[in-house]
Length: 118
Image 1 (cartoon, rainbow, N blue to C red):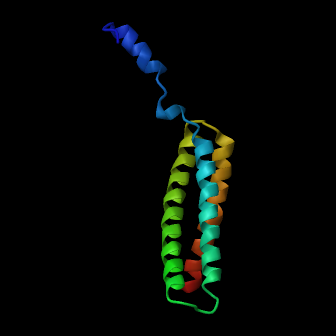
Image 2: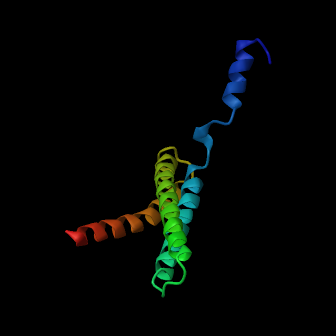
Image 3: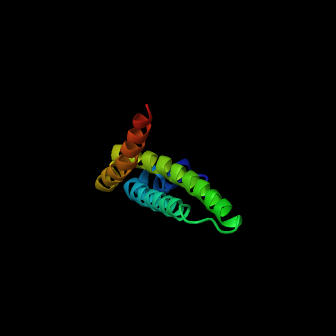
């Protein structure tokens, strides 16, 4: 470590900062993982329609459904934030746009389900 302020400034400039991360690709990966979590929730819901067996399976399915729902919500929020960062910082803009399209479908489905209840 040098005591020269110009050397310290140059080292700080070269450091990898969060603005240089590929946010579009992060958003796309989180968007795909969100879809995987939603698919797992659908499989658990379909498995819950069968004849009941012992008491442990429905409890386990309900627990895993809740865990998958929470994981999907966290990944959805992370993907949305990463897509905005990728678009605004010009870091993999096409991937950020694709991630935004991936996230628009569950948003529209959720809005449709809420509006159908009114």
